Amino acid sequence: MRGLRILETRRSRSLRAAQPSAESRLWSRLRNRRLAGFKFVRQAPVGPYFADFCCREEKLIVEADGATHSTDAERAHDARRDAFLTREGFRVLRANNVEVYENLDGVLETILAALERRETW
Image 1 (cartoon, rainbow, N blue to C red):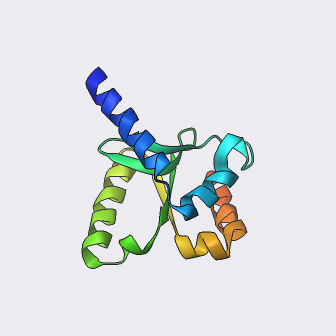
Image 2: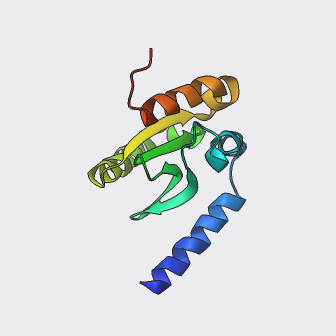
């Protein structure tokens, strides 16, 4: 178990170091409880997967998706991943990178609504 934890830590660090710019932009607004006091961590291991951003308290995972999530095979992989995370009790929210760049406040409002379990328009 300890060996697995060490590998997860190394992988998380590697993913954080190679963070795409959209993730970096979103992280700057989620870190240090900047979104209404909710605590997020990035590149958190959940089973065999790593969540871009995870609020463990509310069991919400936020994924920032780029162009690599556009083929049928990639969408099928995302669906399997989301199904696993849902079985583990998480809710998964996806925002594409274009949304993060062009409407960051809207993305943050959607995340906050999910955290507060309220509807958005």
